[in-house]
Amino acid sequence: MATPAHSLGYAGCNFLRQRLVLSTLSGRPVKIRKIRARDDSPGLRDFEASFIRLLDKITNGSRIEINQTGTTLYYQPGLLYGGTVEHDCSVLRSIGYYLEGLLCLAPFMKHPLKIVLRGVTNDQVDPSVDVLKATALPLLKQFGIDGESFELKIVRRGMPPGGGGEVIFSCPVRKVLKPVQLTDPGKIKRIRGMAYSVRVSPQMANRIVESARSILNKFIPDIYIYTDHMKGLNSGKSPGFGLSLVAETTNGTFLSAELASNPQGQGAAVLPEDLGRNCAQLLLEEIYRDRVFAALEELFPDYV
Image (tube, rainbow, N blue to C red; front, side, top):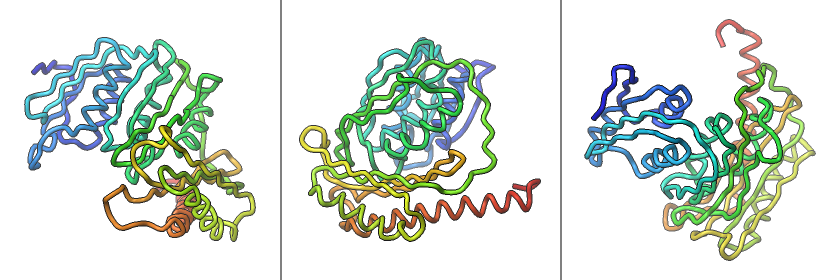
């Protein structure tokens, strides 16, 4: 396996995505050793191998070497090419796992990126496509990445374990980003959300909305939670439901929280009323943490 003198060396599976993304942006090769070397099943997982294949698709000239046990990875990045790409994501992780990396790379392609990602759109591990669409895209627009070609569209929803979802992400090329200064988060002015259900009764989403509003209405009147019930081919391969909530502040900051039902055949059944209330409480906790951090920053600006 090649080990050029100028490559960066790391050990372990932690921050694998970040290391590969930063390697691609900087052009520095990386060699990662001892990837779960002491586990019963050592080496790269399927979802990590899928992310590496995705990087190979959006670049031109990348060199990837993996040893037989999958515990050592050498990655020499190529040119960020872009164009039209299709990728089947591993159902072990949500499409959000792959989108987080793409959001960092997409503005710096040679050609505008338009990619179709298939897999799980909403799960209990990674940020859902709904949350990324409501929070990450507006944030990137502040850096000057905008236009009609900048969008994230949900074509089909897919819940674990079967998946079957599909999203389309397109992003224009921006070689230079505008500087952004975000120091004052502002005050909460409105809350938006999306309650979704697939392969279950449409009433599930309505029950989620009612239970979430029963808590949030005590704090702010400007609340609107949309419902999305997909049928047939657009509903993926597994049943499920969930809720994503986003609070927007007066200064354009977004705070989010989300919950999804347990995958089919795993864990206890979740009532939609409980899920809605718990998700609303998670959002309130997120707002509380943001307020506490802002207060600490004012009291101890040199330490926070």
